Amino acid sequence: METNLANQFLAKRTNGIRSSVIREILKITVQDSEFLSFAGGLPNPNLLDQNLLLTATEETIRNYSRVALQYGDSTGYESLRKRIQSDFVDVPVQTNRIFITHGSQQGLDLLGKLFLDVNTNLLLEDPVYLGALQAFSPYRPNMIPLSMEFDGPNLVELEKILSMQKIHCFYTNPSYQNPSTVTWSLEKRKVVASLLDQYGVILFEDEAYKYLDFKGLVFPSISSFRERLDLTFVLGSFSKIISPGFRLGWVVVPELYQKIFTNAKQGNDLNTNQFSQVVMDILLSHLDWKEHLSKIQSYYMKQKEHLVELLKFHLPEVRFEEPKGGMFLWTEYPNVTEGDMMKGIMEKKVVMVPGNEFRLVSTESAFFRMNYSFLPNQEMEEGVKRIVSVYRDIIT
Ligand SMILES: Cc1ncc(COP(=O)(O)O)c(C=O)c1O
Image (cartoon, rainbow, N blue to C red; front, top):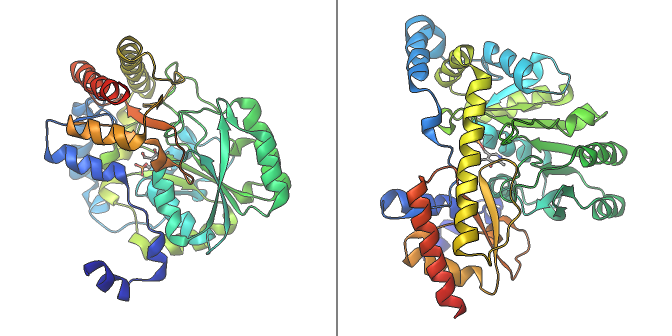
């Protein structure tokens, strides 16, 4: 009844709005602390030096309150934009092409708003980042899945898709992808850049996990190999390298679209949180970046190794590729369904995210995304044991 009543007034595009199982799960785990969660993509807050944060916040209030407590430029706080341009962007652009957004998630939504009409052909990785589906689906594009291999997309399939229909945009997350952790090889980055140039496709390149390689490797963006920079948007984020609490990310916008992007952003939020931007800028000016990153990278590597050891020991049937970075394991549980596993593990108060949430077309196989960046070791072990008991109950 309530839903019908709501539908009388809601815009048609709201039919496309997807829920996020991850957000629902997060809500449950916050409400009930007995839940052990492998579900979220939560960076570990203890990896940021709290004293430095205190210093940056204090300095903001003491010396920059006139700026920090005011509305700001819709494109972002100049000093932070310059820092992003010099330290985080590998395509040759001026500072005025960097837009600071409320997380890269806002960037995704704005790109959807600007480039997707009903039935616009949008190419997506399979599996794909769920938040991108949430951002794009309200615009009701025609979403086309592209099969992935361990080192990037299946190039034969990609070329076939590009030659058979006009693809308007391609969204990809090429390093330590969420959820599969697939990381594109250098070779595939170059080939795809040239194919996208050849077929005139807009690229939305999401670099959310770019700096989370366990050994400190940093892959160049696909965009850095493109000639058509007028068709290239690069999204970055401070969420996984500093903290998602700031809600700060950025989009590199081609000159051609700067004005329309500014106008769309103004309609959205006028400007990104000024206070947050100023604190971030000061924080970064004090941070020993190399040391900070290597702390994150080695911590995540240890956490990954712990989860891998636990699974290999307790549940050798589970299949996965060992990631080289990021914060997830993309696991396949043979001979069970995602539904049965989810029901069982929820009863045992442990959660992970079912793989079909990340797909345009559901598969029969049971995949789960398991996060290892958040749970401490003992709880991780307890969580795995609970999952094992559910799995064994189902298959016996
Ligand atoms: C691939 C990917 N892109 C974008 C985001 C959004 O990040 P944020 O809005 O915090 O910058 C996430 C968050 O988990 C992500 O995994």
